[in-house]
Length: 180
View 1: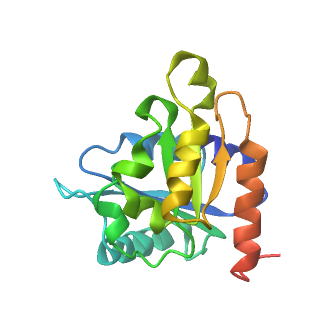
View 2: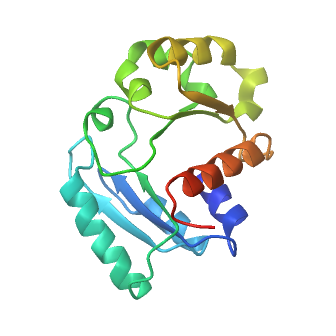
């Protein structure tokens, strides 16, 4: 999804990525292949990034880009729905993703991730015919914890919902007063 986002916004916005993982730089390698500046932060076992790690990562990113501050900085936290919700990274917006194969019960199981987010992305919707996943159930669960959370269903593979996601990003950027 992030790779498709980078492709779609290339030439329109300056993007940067801080990629968090317990081990490996695989995600960063895929992002870099799309042409976006990226810094990989490995936690060595910790289940989340923290603000100090992100600060160091941002300094590394600036060094890589010659102090060219991105219009949008994506911080992809360690891939779980437990720990990251509890840590403020200094972000302007928080987006929580659940893919169709993960199941629609994630808002019920991990409410803090949905309470602290402004957007819920239901991803890999091209797989809906193959899984017992109800977008309505997932949406209702998320909105029971956070009535203000917006929900977008998308498939990076087919492109369905990508326009809504990109429009959300553009509006978020305008709301921060950072660009255009």
